Image 1 (spheres, rainbow, N blue to C red):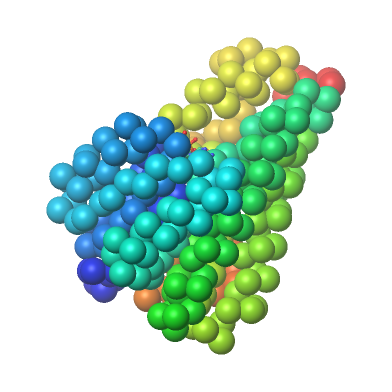
Image 2: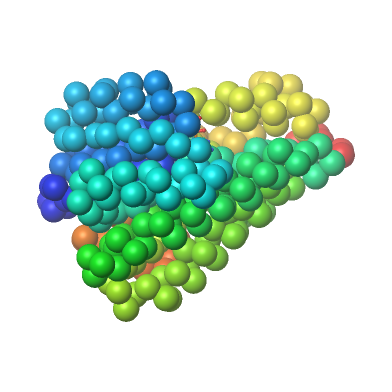
Length: 270
Ligand SMILES: NC(=O)c1ccc[n+]([C@@H]2O[C@H](COP(=O)([O-])OP(=O)(O)OC[C@H]3O[C@@H](n4cnc5c(N)ncnc54)[C@H](OP(=O)(O)O)[C@@H]3O)[C@@H](O)[C@H]2O)c1
């Protein structure tokens, strides 16, 4: 299937590693010009050069901390100034920490709500005027299945994700008249650089061994494994294309049919 994305301009937040880097690469392969954003400027620049070398598409790095509205405004303005337009926004930067209510602290909740939710709000808010002026745009929000499949160990991601999902659907109702469509992608566990750290935290908080923690997620997924980055990136790329423009105000889970209650069958007694 030809996705017809050649020459489209995409802004991908959190594009230096993990799922965001996979999305930037996948969009680049389809011929999109891509701006990527993250805090670590050297790692971001290296990712842009690597993806540009692999795909032949123009990939530019705009460092910024999306906890701060001023940075969100600046990177959106830089993208629009550099490429002349923004066709696709993929909000992806940041992830809320796992943990139980009695151990999550202010910083954890700030990451959840201040970055994973408000970061999406600020970048979207800054991008919408450009899309309105173009009378077309596509926003794909990387959220997470914790927003719809509850787990007591994932209350911070759950809260941020539920807020992001609500935002996605609500904005679809407002901006359809400008031909701007929105959808959310809700992954379950994905094999990124962060995965080993999450397994260590689960082991600590649930009083179980590392080995047992490592089996919890695959055991909770009927297909018996976690997702690979490319599977998520390819779904996002299709959704970002004009072919999927009519998939609006809705969410798609990519989690192998994960059954979260299974994760709670550990020996944790907290
Ligand atoms: N991995 C999973 O299992 C999984 C499951 C469900 C949903 N998701 C969602 O998918 C998205 C990507 O996850 P991931 O695992 O690929 O994350 P990751 O590996 O932790 O990558 C996060 C990216 O965001 C950037 N970032 C972090 N804080 C930032 C800030 N304050 N301002 C700007 N950029 C920032 C990071 O670069 P810097 O550190 O240099 O800023 C990096 O590029 C997240 O929204 C996550 O919630 C992931």
